Length: 584
Image 1: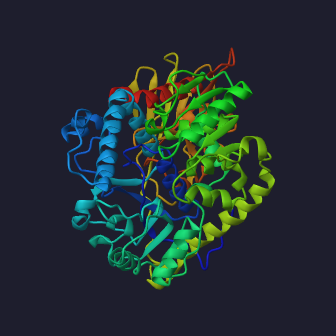
Image 2 (image 1 turned 45 degrees about the vertical axis):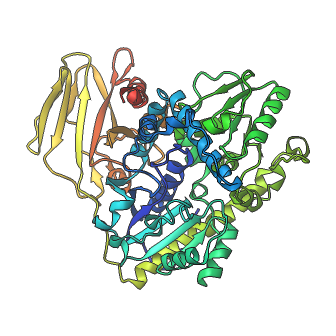
């Protein structure tokens, strides 16, 4: 996709605030839509950083790894024996019962998932560390006014960020209204208010004050776009959720397919609200088709499951694994906006149950898929025709382009209006490190005057050139400094480390994790030739470290064996990546 930009290259340094890692439910979609948005900007040469923001509804004391500790400290367990006070009105009884049941559900949830939750949390952290550029500091809502932030422009990007919370009110951070952001231009992309129960005049006034400074706003749902226009007079287009800014192949390359899953399956992913119909329909459909039912739903939804049945509930899943389950499913049942979105992106046959709010209705209407919704009087599993993805694909391309045009033109307009054309982000210098291992002592490294040899362990040598390379330069690789008797030099594999996670350079021009390479046959390692000229280290500085390791590849002249065994190295790296959660 090529987006039209009114002018030349965009050079602003962008700070992004969105819902990403700080979600008490560990929502799979939150890390994904933020990554898609940041990667889209990077594709168009725009430097951006995700501001690690902890929203207003997150208590500083909250323990995301072991949430049960937090809820026990705050007395939620008392609800197990608590009795409703006397003298309450019917409305007060209703409120008390709702809060009481919620406390019991929360305690039961995190007690049952006590050993699983840390592993799931770590998978979210692993994904974010592998795929985000984010601030080192975490900024809490209460402290944001006292922090220092250095960005040319701020964007609040998608999901339910402009919702009024009955207990906390609006979240100023998501409106970019904190002190360090006040004088900087602001853009809102695919903003959503979630389930809407109406606002008071005072709440509307507050909303208008927060949105007045924005240079441009686009909403994810048409009802919200119309409401913002009515309140502020601003033109508010409707755009796609950021996950749609990237295509099927992008998500395929990230997805980790289910392991040890031999049977074909129906996937159920339901969120807590009104999920009973989705559960019942998925159970009956899977039985009719003779398929296994795999359930990745929230605990709140799964309390409605029958005690026995041909289904499997899985909680220890990360965002990339969640994508894999969607991609590999035969059919999908859901009431989730983003499960619908990825079903469309992966071109799956899916069916949709009841959900509060209009965001699911919006996505179905956007792609002319309203017939996927089943109700008490309409069975979409029997009445709806298979989805024609040639038609859906045409709609997606049109709307993807319009959405991309909006955000790129909004950023360029800010650049022009505020005269920010000279705020180029200079890429950091980087190091190249040449390395070789061997199976015997016949490996030697020639001495150069421009570098340093170092034996890092027995039968392994590194060569480090003295110079650091310009962050924007095309590089000519050094002549191979190693000699290995009995072996022929074939070239170099390139690896970098980003947030402690290894990534390898591949033939598609991107750096990929071990999981992405191992599980996708179409992603192949790139082998650089001796003294090759390349811009791989400058063009791909997004999500890489500042050091690149070039691993010598050798072929045995007698038996043709190639070392190193790169697949073994990749599997070792992937194993380390996946077991980190067990160390928490």
